[in-house]
Image 1 (cartoon, rainbow, N blue to C red):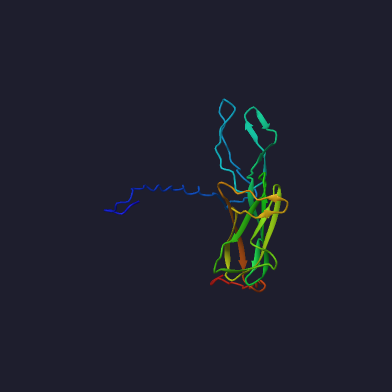
Image 2 (image 1 turned 135 degrees about the horizontal axis):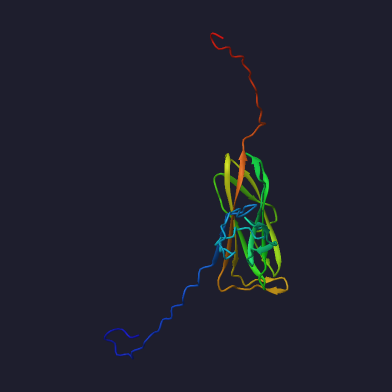
Length: 221
């Protein structure tokens, strides 16, 4: 492109703007009940009813047990299974409760049921309520091929009482590194799975109880 007033030929310059990559597919899972539904549903003369529900966040298979009460008798439906699944997910392993200051191993296992190898990066959420130290020789990223799993570990020590929310995220990231004998798949859209579980932190010491008895004599009796 020539400057204004110059005698040189006029040139045009084209600028191509690349579209930004699409955002990653994110799942945030926080609801992990042991049992589910427990509802009473009124069924009309048609003998059927539609019940819209949202499945919990647990990657598992649910077994449904349905029975019906009517003036004509009792009905029991056959068992039906419902499988909740996603091809890339994270699973946390931690105790139900710990003592404040107690050190334990927090484990996060990543499962890859995609058809190709991917590079995964696992990141725990930081908090002032606890400390996290990576276990020796364990990196925060690793190759994970089809139908494979990988466990990442940290040493955790809570410093406050109550129920703490512990969150860990696993992301399938872009990488051109070799993955054993396979080639790492570079996803067009990244995948991020975040799991949040509650941890009960109790006070130090041993709980004790004392019972005191009194004999009450009302006045005039």
